Each structure stands twice: as C-alpha cells, then as structure tokens.
Image 1 (cartoon, rainbow, N blue to C red):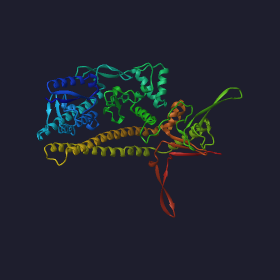
Image 2: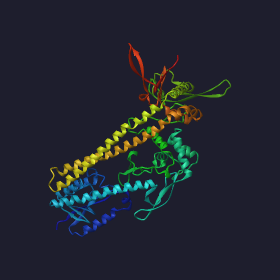
Image 3: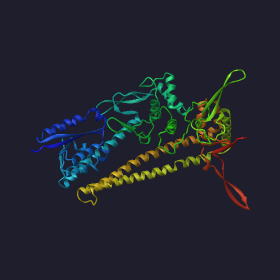
Image 4: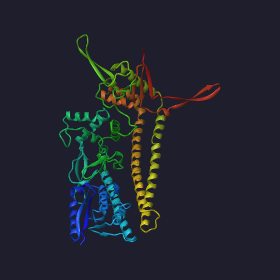
Length: 570
C-alpha cells in the first residue's frame, strides 16, 4: 500500500481568531480526517496567522508560495484544509490555484467538503462557484461591518464588547446593545473634568505653539495624571492631538493587520469616520482640531509631502518674537536665540537677547556682516512693517477679493473628485465584465486564458484601491479648504482689532498670531524681506486707464503685495 504524504494548511484571518487559538481546532479536525484514511500520513503543516484570504493576493501570501515550492519538489501528495476557503477567498485567482495544484498531481481535500476534482467543465464551474461564493461572503461581511461601525460611531457606541480603557476625556457607560456572543457593548460619554484638560492641551498646541514634549512636561509639572500611567509622555499627548474623536468623529480602521503580532497605522485619509459629527462626543471645535493637524503635519520631519511648509513656529519657547520664521538672507540658515549679560552703571546685571545666524555653529562662510542682531532692532523693523501692512488692508475693500478666493478655492479639487468618481465607476464596471468572462473560460466560451484574466482583474483591483484612497484624500482636502475659507471670511472683521489683540497677548500667543500673518522673514545685510501669508494678489488686480499717444490703455495694478522689502539705512 502506497503511503500518501499529506500537507495541512491552517489559516485564521483575524487577530481575534489568533487570540481564540482557532488553529488547534483546525489541526485536530484535519488530524482525525487523516486517521480515517489508512494510507495517509501527515508530513507537512502550513500555518497562516492573521492573514486575510480575501484582501491579500496569492502572490503576496508566503505560505501559498511555500506550498507551490513543495509541490514542485514532490514533497507532498495531498493538500488538506478544514474548509476550502482556507486556501483563499478571491474568485478571480483561488480557483486557478486549486486547478494548478490538481494539474500538478496533487489531491486537494477539505474535511467538510471532500475532494475537489477538475475532470470536466462542470467540475471547473463548481470549483469557481465555491470561491465566487466565498469572495461574495467576504465582500458582504466587509460592507456590513463597515456600515455597522459607522452607524455605531454616529451613536458613540464601540463595536466591541467587554471592558477597555476609555480615551482620556471620556467615560464608559452601558449601551444596551450586545455582540453576537452576548457581551454588552459600552458607550462613551464626556468626562467634564478631563474635557477641560483636553481643551487646554489643544489650546497650548494651537494658540501658544507648545510642542507635544513641552505639553507633556506642563501636564506633569501641574501633577495632572493620565489614564494609564503615572506621567504624560510625548506619544500619549501626540496620540490625543491626532485623535478625531475629540472633535466628535470616532475613527475606525486606523490600523491594518500585518500579521498576528503587528499592525500598521494607516494614513488619516483612509480612516472610517462617520459622515455626521457626534455632538455628544465633541470636546474641541472642528476648526481647532484641523488647525492642530496642520501644525503637526508641518512639523513632522517624516512627511513625504513635497509641498509641506511650516505654518507655525517650530517652537515658542524662545523669548524672541520671530524665531522659527526668520532666516539669514545671505546663507539661508535659520536664526537662533543668543544672549549675553552685562552690568550697567549701577552694577545691576542686564540681559541682552540677539538674533544669531545658526550657520555659525557649522561654518564661517556666511556673508552676513552682523552675526548677532539685537532683539529690539529686528522686532521694531518687522512689527512696524506688519502694522503698516494691516493698515493698508483696512483701507481696501477685501470683501470682493475674499469672495473670489472662496469661490475658486475648491474648484480644482471638486473637478478632480468628480473625475475620480467617474474612473472608480468605470473600474468597478470593468472588474464585473472581467469576472463574467472568467465564468466563460470555465465553459470554453472565452477567448481569454484564465491566467490573463487573473492578471487583468488583479490590475483593476489595485487601481480600484488606489482610486478609493485618492477619493478620500481629495474629499479631505476639500473639507480642510472649506474650513480655511471660513477663516479667510473672518479676516476683514479681525484686521481692525488684530493690533489690540496682539498687544494684550502674552509672548506665546503673540508668536502664534504673527505666524498667522507672516510666512517668512529674510534678513540681508542691506534689507529685510517679509513674506505675508495673505494670498490675494490674483484677485486684487484693478485695471487703471492710462493715456499713451492719445490711446487708452489698461494697466493691471496689484493692491496688495505679499512680499515687502525694507531697505536698511546706512
């Protein structure tokens, strides 16, 4: 009696199944099935933990590549699984994986469904329908789970049961809803005491320019305790500022499973957020949260965004107003804080602060004649320019210009969004056509090969994922631009009171107010250049009628200059 060598494939697709230890159940069932065949002998075991047979293609699943290698090396005669969907759930490729195994002389068995054979067209069709149904179930489950998550998010109810720690600023109460296993879910409510601290954290970050490390120190110095440890850390403060739940949008799918042990954080644009704000969970204003996100993105050195720019000072600890905004015009290095102490005539120690080109720490090639410039000199020149700039705006009717900016700000993005939606519809239609063609290959009615169709479907599926991601990114851009437009509409009303607000503010707030107006200051030997953030030039042009050789001509005149150059005397 010839002994048949059996390879068993055990797979669980989620971390919960890993934690429940579903593998032993599959192993026991397969072991008992092998024992019922006298000439079968277990020689190989293939284990996949936390791997989706629907989301991950065959080429990216290491265990299937191992099985293929062992088949080609003639190391197994039978592949046994608990159910056929353990091999995969992708109808465009899994039937052909099974067909390949059988064509290589391997018997493919399932404990629950018996042997899979490919002897005629009917067998091929049954093989395809098995995975078509499995893929459909996965797709329906994914859609159903997403809908349930969004619906629960809108009610502030968590999708899981049992006890877990609520985010700082919230408490749990019983929701009255249960999981399939009868475990009661919990619902979030605002903790009023902690909510005040959350608001203070966002205020320090957005209005005073504190970094997350400085905020952590501030909280620890004030003896304010976090939820899960004795002291606040940079990561705990950073995760709070990046959590949209604080503006009333509980987020799901922030991470994807890499394997049983690890997960990977996903870009913000791909997170699942409810369409409507959950007002009962909102602690900070939506505008404040997105302002914090902008600051954090601009300070993130790992950002891949080539258009990234610092929209706020990198730090506000310095006693100098313009540190973080000023650069040396001669060498391009940023200015840093410098200081000295001298005794006056009365013997009192007086401290002097300076703007110093940071290139002096690395090189002596900077062409700036004064390496240290007195604080009073720099700030007097720049502040006078700021006040003059604001006064010039007060004399201009900004309403018309701002209205044009708002009307045009999202025009390109909205066109891109519509184009993306059209492409997504076309891609989904193409996928359906190709899947219909797969059925025809099984009955011999198609002129395409199964391999070619598999390749085309995989290509279209990848494009679909890219378009879905792009759609989310564009929608998020539109949302953020609309919030920026709201701020722009308030400029006209703020200009008359800006100076009073600035003069009353403390140093940290002054820096953040200035950063709303100034993009960058460059200091040269003979001049200062100041770039203002108000980008209205293209909408502030007026046509002036001039006479030239008795002919009427039109000349465009800019009413607002975004870069102002100040010549230095002497």
